[in-house]
Length: 288
Length: 291
Image (cartoon, rainbow over all chains, first blue to last red; front, side):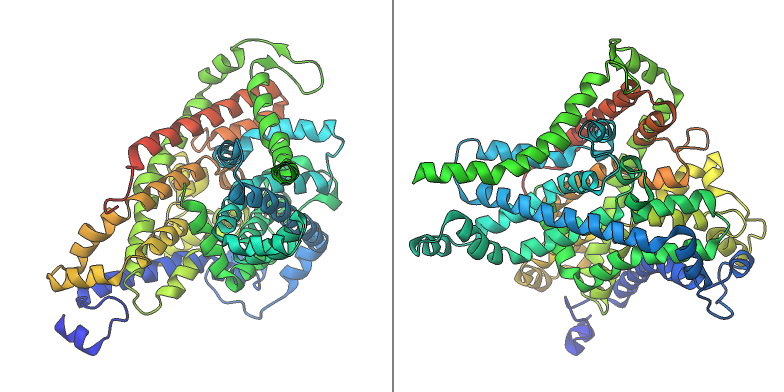
């Protein structure tokens, strides 16, 4: 124990016995395996042929083949779904940021009657399992004549981002010093102007966190996309997943290739914007 | 001046309130009202009192769905969250590679649940599946169990798809742990406390509040696990992995009995609120021990 203090082998807290370190490393190796193994296995298998996959789950591809990818694109027209998914996810994220930063700004910085109540009611939306509302929303889509459009998906996904976005953005607006706002007003800036060019830029970290989390949730959503759209041009990527379970269950390379293409953007965004993802999860959790 | 602001407050709040009314308030009201009717979505709903609920409560699928949800909630509280906590305690020691571990652990939570589901369908296949291949490799030569479609193993298999992916818990707890001042640890060390004693007597009491939040989040997530069940077993075999949301979606897509589907939805919402309320009472434990 003394030894490790002297040599500073431990980079964090000093004074661990080798046994403690071994247990800790076992835990760390375990979580790396359960987290990475399925994904890496998926990527490797997407380059194998169907026969290779059926023969052995653990072999390397003899010669890496792109046929899985070619077939995935040919069978499921994945490129169109990519575009649909991108349009829906980006629009919903932008709309959510706009609407909830406006609401978060007012709720975070102005005292008025019913402020706490409105915030509480809007935040309580997080307690509702979104699946439960599928039938009325389906019905409403028909009534408003927006069934099978990208717009209904954008609207629904924006609403689903409400609790997280409001929470992150309101807190961030509350923390901005009052002087900055007052200075803007003294210089004669209007309410809108102050919000857009003074407050919004200051809330940038929170906006980023909210954006990343919202985008990933939209990108991954399955049930509403499945029931609120029917035309091929409005089908998003996760529905292709469903398609592969039913019609091409024995074309594994194509299925794996499609899965790789589906998860690549969200994993990529996560790798680039890790800090934002983690901070949004922590901030969102504080109030439970 | 004040009036001037009032106008803007209304303008700035109304889009959010409109979206809330449209996508939360109206659907929830509609769910509860139509749950007392027989309705196919086209004709006028017919009020039938509690018939949907009595029919539902008599269904074996419903009993299984409630039982499964409660078991999953218990798994979330007693396995998922403690596991995430242990990982956080380990990572907080900042051994070599802890940042990498933390980053990697979150990946399964970022990947779409539907993609994870499909991947695990393959892992659990009887012949070419990864799990059985692995078992055969280490000597269980007759490992050909169809994990997801064998009544005995389906529930456990589906549970394994999420049980140990507790990165959200880890990240929340870890951010709390890393904000504890190192002086506290130093003085404990000077007093001769072992690392495990530090975890037991300093870290755990400090984490009570974060743990409460994690439990609420994990239990709320149990009520939202639709994708992985729907794409792996669709509630089967029998009703071994049935959940209320799968029952509800099947009632909508297969039989178009919307009143009945909304009765299930109503139970889902009420049960969610009830279980969450209980967790809040039992586990929130008020303030952190050192406050």
